[in-house]
Length: 164
Ligand code: HEC
Image (cartoon, rainbow, N blue to C red; front, side):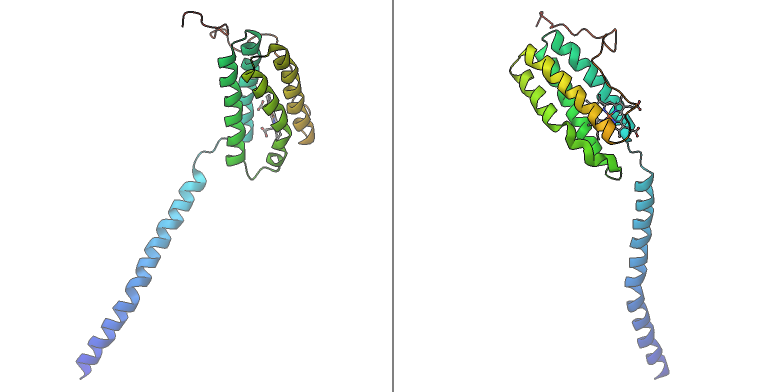
C-alpha cells in the first residue's frame, strides 16, 4: 500500500514537473536569443546618412551627364537608406522628421523619369534644401549639404556608356 502510494505520488510529481522543466529550457533559450539579438550589429543613423551623402553627390553628376539610368539608380539608393533609417533607427526621435524629404524625393524621381535636366537641376536644389531643413529641425544645423563641385570618387565615370 505504502509502495503504491509512493508510485502514484512520484508519477504525479514527474508528470507535473516535466512541463515546467521544458518551459524553463525554452525560457533559457529565449533569454539567450534576446541577448544575442541585442548584441547584433545594427547600422546607426550617421552611417545611413554617410551613405546618403555619397549617393546624393553621385546623383548630381549622373544628372549633369544626362545619365538617367544612373540617376535612377542613385535615387533608389537614397530611398533604400531612408527605408533603413525607418527600420533600424526607430529609437531615434529624429526619425520622425524623415518625411521632410518625401516630396523633394518624389519630384526629382519624376524629373529623372522624364529625363528633364532643367527640372532635375531645380529639384536637386530642392532636395538639398530639404536635407538641410531636416538637419535644422533635428538640431544638426552644423551639417550643411550643398551641390557638389567635384565627383566624390575618381574611379567612376558618370558619362553614359555609349558602347552598350
Ligand atoms: C530626419 C531628417 C533628415 C533628413 C531628411 C536628412 N538628414 Fe542627414 N542627418 C540627420 C541627422 C539626425 C544626422 C545626425 C546623425 C548622427 O547622429 O550621426 C544627419 C547627419 C548627416 C550627415 C553627417 C554624417 C556624418 O556622420 O558625417 C550627412 C553628410 C548628412 N546627414 C547628409 C544628408 C543628405 C545629403 C540628406 C538629403 C539627401 C540628408 N542628410 C537628409 C537627419 C536628416
